[in-house]
Length: 494
Image (cartoon, rainbow, N blue to C red):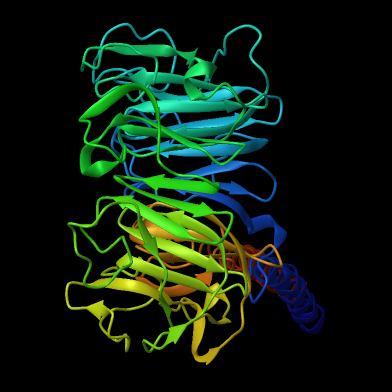
């Protein structure tokens, strides 16, 4: 009997462990992140982020003061996990606004928005300005009848822009500095919460290829490479001396193929590979050392450097403006960062950097090349899940998104890398520790990734199972001993 019981217990222990081990390894992210945890797109602000998974599902993380997490929570609770709640599905474009709101569109052409709606920037039937205007879950925003399918969305601090497939722009939200481009009075009390068409003739009459937003300034790029801007003219954002403009004005630029804007800084890429920048330069966002501020904007960024400060010639492939920090991508797949660097915003630690262009104010005044390292399993719980002793060649294909404080980029194998401020784990490194170097971004969490939620403990289930088996085994032994004692008594009495 004892041998049979021992054999049974050993068999059950082995079976439970065999069931638990595969579950543990399925959650791993060694080298290539499992399809279940891949990130395909990113948008965010300093305090919150949104992620679109490879499956098109949208997840949120960070602060929730205005309901920007879209989880139906009407409070300022901080939720660091982007994995557990799917806020929206089939997302094809998304952007976030500085005041805490999100605008997104899905494959079926539906427009959604949520978060702060103080000025109608999340749509709906807002008629008056109020901090109580907030949307805590994705809300459908009705486009005007006859509007074409949506191809892109962009958000400023208090307003939203929508670009349709036929190259038309619709705007809604606050017009305090003319950022709607509708010719309405530039006043804090002026708003529209319904997407409203910007007169195409004010944009040259042709189709618009791209839109972008600073906080209170809007931009449109035409298919022929012309750029229009309207709204706030602070820091020379309109490339003129105007304080603001309520209607689009054509900027003195030609041959532009891409515009990127964030906060109060703008970048443009031209067909011949020139990188132009204008707006605020408070953190060295112009990428030009010893810049004479009395020069005429836009400025051209023409010098690029290795990690040690050696000049290098590159052909520019892509750009992204993060507001406080910005990046240039070379045709060889290398990333060059400049601007604010104190919390890893540029993908390297300024305290240990060897480039002479990384200055004591924690800024990089010239585009400095990032170093990538071999990724390690996020389950190891390391500060940065990469082997800092083993550099690796990574060819970045395009930038996914940047909040300035953190940036996401896709390599040529479709794998996401991220770097920057990791408050609340928003870099998705599998850790909540500081991240000063590019790491593989994954929606998977390790034990310390989110202190506010229940730990993922893959040993709990087998332990509980073993405890139950042990309890039954003890009961069985006790029952057997009682029965045996009873038999002995009967035999003795007989």
